[in-house]
Image 1 (cartoon, protein in one colour):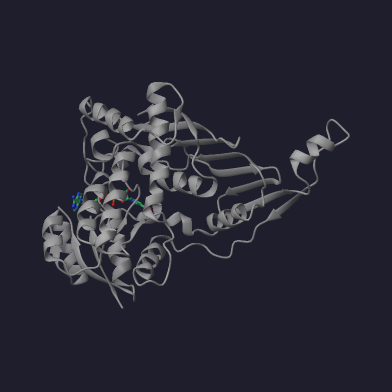
Image 2 (image 1 turned 30 degrees about the horizontal axis):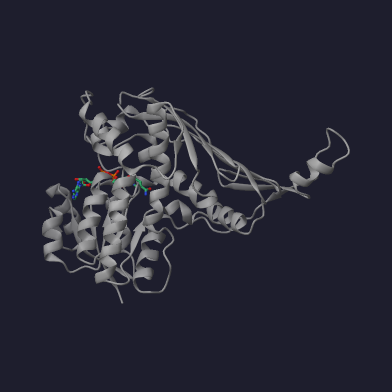
Length: 386
Ligand SMILES: NC(=O)c1ccc[n+]([C@@H]2O[C@H](COP(=O)([O-])OP(=O)(O)OC[C@H]3O[C@@H](n4cnc5c(N)ncnc54)[C@H](O)[C@@H]3O)[C@@H](O)[C@H]2O)c1
């Protein structure tokens, strides 16, 4: 079986997906769709498939099993709802949706769709889950190697972006166009992996700056603090204004700590639990014996292509999804909670009230005064954007 895919939204990311699908044995690029006719026509010509200029025309024409959505974020929701109505599988770009209420709508539509098509699939482009260190961390945590978890801190400040980047699309870095800044556009991967590794926090406190480094109306610097009912605390620090930035994850538990920085994963392994040691050690300044283990990483990760192949395999009943899109609810709940907490200057509790962020976002959109100067640029090399 060859899975017939239609790609919707064909510029930077969608253009990459078209190329990957075109070169894939298990998939066929059956159609392309973009509201920009020039882009749609040029991709259709390049890959020898029909072009559509609206999702209405695309769905009416049919002839595909699944859609890959690579439009600006808000449309991920509207297009998914239309696809599920027709029993069409969905692989959506990150973020799955912009706020909790939208993702709940998508999950509901997917559940409804499953009544018509039992094995209907809903997948998300969280390709960083395929990276070697990420898979290893997940494996070690699931095996309980760190014991009781104390703290998880992610400093992810290497998302440096210039003003030219923000000027390259009218939708970028606006409340109306993407509903947020660095948390919404750059950090969905880390927020997804954060919750994938250690679960969703129970309480979230957030602080941010709007347009601190750039002429934009959304956040470009964020510091968040998380609390878990099990006692773990977390931190999440991000920025698009720092260079050189840092990308360092620390997960600390009674048995030691895992540090992922760059392509290196190190396990500082306590021989005995800290919880036992601090009760029983005779000296006040004693420390548990600790071994430094460099964790071998054999795979580099298949990125977007692997997620699309996995989606096709899952459609063919040969694999489970690597990144089920319903799990995107968690990363967006953390995102929305950080922002709401910052706006309201109070701690937010999860699960988040689904109306709260939507209400705030509508106010931000209505109150927007920023006039954007859009400078069209050629399609970027997306290898710089993961
Ligand atoms: N997974 C990743 O690593 C990764 C990297 C970059 C971007 N993304 C995501 O991909 C999405 C697109 O980002 P981009 O940088 O490619 O944006 P882009 O602006 O370069 O491209 C978006 C395209 O969608 C088209 N479009 C807009 N609304 C449409 C609609 N309703 N129907 C059909 N086409 C429509 C536009 O004309 C444009 O060609 C975003 O959600 C972004 O977060 C993911």
